[in-house]
Length: 125
Image (cartoon, rainbow, N blue to C red; front, side):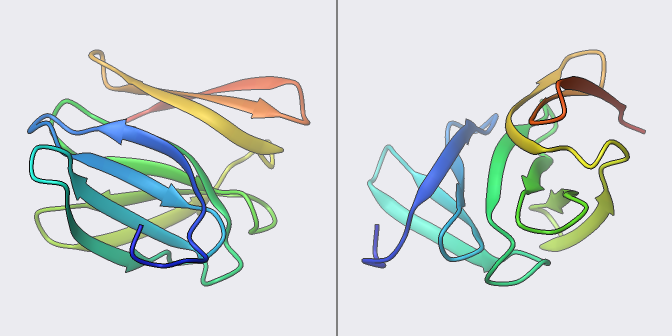
């Protein structure tokens, strides 16, 4: 990692073989190319430096979804790599800490919400 204080928590593989990661310590989303070993780009998470990004998934279309666990209530963030735009919505259950999530082929996200003992299912439109 280029930053000594970086603390990636989770990674997700994109359809093109690149990797997205959440940097919990600095409040960033990052994009890495493992084939070349190159850091492609980093973006500040919408919730700021204290947003503590955690669980992450990438859809088959390449949309990146992740949780900001330091925002109360926790937020589910959508990142569109094509436009470079972010949007965020509160997780209805509060989310606890979404440590893991998965995107399924039937356009759903499953969120493992630790601390609140729930699994959230998000229908993607």
